Length: 342
Ligand SMILES: [Zn+2]
Image (cartoon, rainbow, N blue to C red; front, side, top):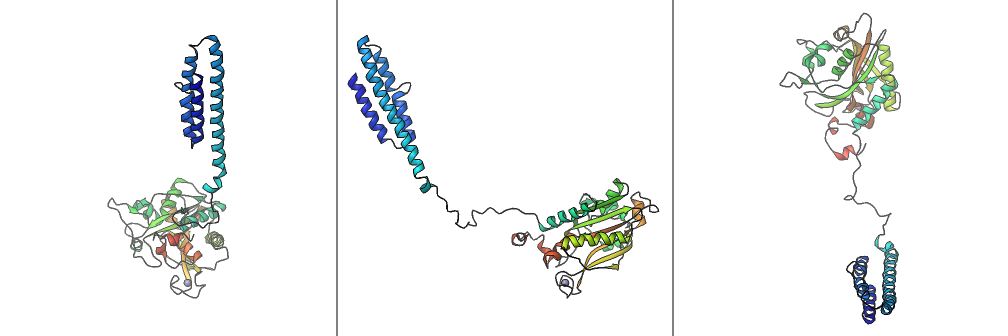
């Protein structure tokens, strides 16, 4: 038996020396020391021996076992050491190598219209305004009727509207949201309503069928056009980071009285004339005025007690002015080369 054990030990040590990885060592461990392993068999055989032989056998079997276990442990340690020894060869990384387009995941960003909308919201919040939201599909009352634009009023011809088959429409301005706000809240009321609006319109460099607006409203006792001008000047100064020249021209809009067109000097050409300002040096930025008494009345507010101002402004045009963009159609083009500039 002693010879068998010694032969087994030699065989095991040779196999351990020849093993190339941890898995091979584990297979050997099971082969020799597992539940059905070779050493289990030796110990079973040992039970049949006489007491003197048993003591002797115990010694050489244990010696062989210890030798094999030590060889397994040593080989395992050697594997671990070599694994770390060539780590710098296997897993090196050149941190100075330029990235490739294929592996570069594009970072998302906010659309320039969203960016300016958030900015405008912050500016108005700093002046105590609320931000109101409302539906894009509107009914006739909120988009036209309440705003002093009755069914037979010629102003409806000014609005080229997308009408839906159910008699509703895609809102042509976010004034509809202000109507809802005035019904929901009693004055004093300060609010803006930013959002997407729709016009049935031929597109060119300065016209789109879908664009973004922010409309604003302030209703309280003794509100006048002076309040409006102040708020507009604060807004433009914050947006463009400089004082912007403005002018008011009389303008007719059914929902304001008196009504104005507020123009700003063209920031693209500096007033010299370009396609965006139609070579006039001024850009029509927004209609505004004192809220018409009929509108207040339609929204449940007593015009003998309260007055207000209102304005509506195109966010697209603000972005175009700030970055010198000469074509409004870029915004909805889906052109990533355009969008990635912001
Ligand atoms: Zn211009």
